[in-house]
Image (cartoon, rainbow, N blue to C red):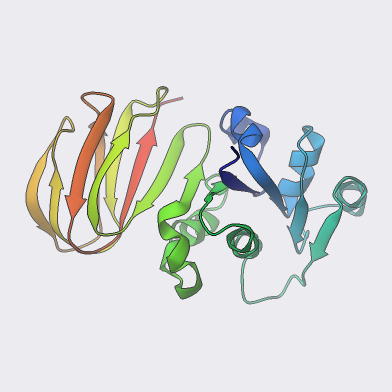
Length: 216
């Protein structure tokens, strides 16, 4: 069963995760240059959105030849192309994961805009199903609760990124543990590791981003 909607932003294929991830998607949305890169590498792009200011006229024509639905926006607008793509993805399914690929490389301002997306009022409802992936990292978001997560086979490291102040944070069975800690400022507990195939954590308030990662 297809359980994800992929938003493919503009990045080199070398930064993508395994191509298998595209086979598990019900829809692939190409954002700006991501649409061109996706088509160029043989992906079936369901729709393309953005201002396409990073494409030449020839490249944009190539996208229009291979993607049935292309929606072009003005370059001067109140949202990024990626935000448009995420908004479209959120309307396609009420429960599928929304996976952003191509959202970590390149400009830091773009990456930070993507990292903070779940704080926007319109995206709060998708926070816990929003995932950012590249060839080294998987970022997942969590709201207050008690969670057990599975280790990705190819990942070594585990980071608990407190995006906000948090209360009653506990890391129960990772390599480095915490017991009922209040975090007073945004903090990244980096370079932790799984001990087994799963790990458990909980917190009472705030928003957490958990990153599974590996070295190149």
